[in-house]
Image (cartoon, rainbow, N blue to C red; front, top):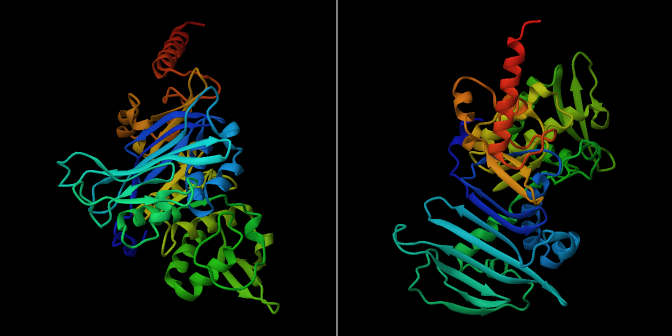
Amino acid sequence: MNEELSEVISPPRIEFLRVQNYRALADLKLERITPLTVFVGPNGSGKSTIFDVFAFLSECFSVGLRKAWDKRGRFKELRSRGKEGPITVEIKYKEPDLPIITYHLEISEDTKGPFVSREWLRWTRKGGAGRPFNFLDFKEGSGSVISGDRPEEKDKRIPEVLESRELLAVNTLGQFAKHPRVSALRRFITDWYLSYLSADNTRGIPEAGPQERLSANGDNLPNVIQYLKEQHADRLETVLNTLARRVPRLEKVDADIMQDGRLLLQIKDAPFERPVMAKFASDGTLKMLAYLVVLHDPSPPQLVGIEEPENQLHPRLLPELAEECRGASAQTQLMITTHSPYFVNGLKPQETWILHRDAQGYTRAEQASRIRGINDFIDQGAQLGSLWMEGHFGVGDPLEPDTRVGDARRKRGTRKQRTKSRKGRKP
């Protein structure tokens, strides 16, 4: 990344996530979350479900609880099978120069539909020496909030009643300047960008006009290229130079306005004189271009989620893409799911979480850095993706389902002993 990014003030970061009763996430807890966090594991292990938790929370703020709820099939489809009680999401996030703030949200349902059964914001003031206290506390649409930039427990609590128990207090009160800490969380969540990029969507010819941020499916890529060309030419040059290093013979990418007012994305490669329209470019070229546009956003979202970035990309490009993601995490938090060991080869153990299902069918997570022996292997020059494929994680292998890390390790050790024994036999 360029020097300009290193001067950006660190954005808010999620450091902890707990989800209860959300599909396979009956009780999932992630601690010490890093600015770049990647989830690996077999199909059905819960990677996309974690991704959807962020999407659900973001949609509760943008389109409302009921629409986000109905879209996912309500309690019938959302609540973990065999479980009772509300769906709970709790995050701890850190703003620069402020204590950690905990946001707790509980969603329940009755005959009238979904409602916010409990919602609170908590932190510790006085240099972290005091006790934690809720400076926003609501139950079924009524509660209280302490206003001000740095609420103290002794400060006056303002009682509030929302128009509906479907409303989120943080989303409602966060629109008022007198609640700056609540407003900051609202801005944080509403600024999340969750990507569902499709190469086919980037091939379209949209109406001309610069747009600052890539859409979730990438259908406005020409508009964002136009915006960068007009407002941030240096950033666009960085994107294109990086793309040219990874796509052989590529010379230029441009967005031209057609006579009918639409925007045409064209790609020129050597030795040909005339560029081709984006609809004739390779899927990999368009996907890599779209990812670079997201990662080099001049005003990046405060959290970016990307599912399976390896699709349509050459495996040898993936470690570099992982490094690109780490560079971008200096100014935005990234959450990524992947099945690619090549992408994981570009990661650090503390950035990698292995998901698997336990004996009850619920998702569990193991941070690679906490698995015995992984850090030692990395210190000796091993690559994380290779360790994954060799079975050193102990969990998350679809061909050897095992819900207990210890048992999996013992089995792996037994296999190695058998292999060693076989190698020692005489023919």
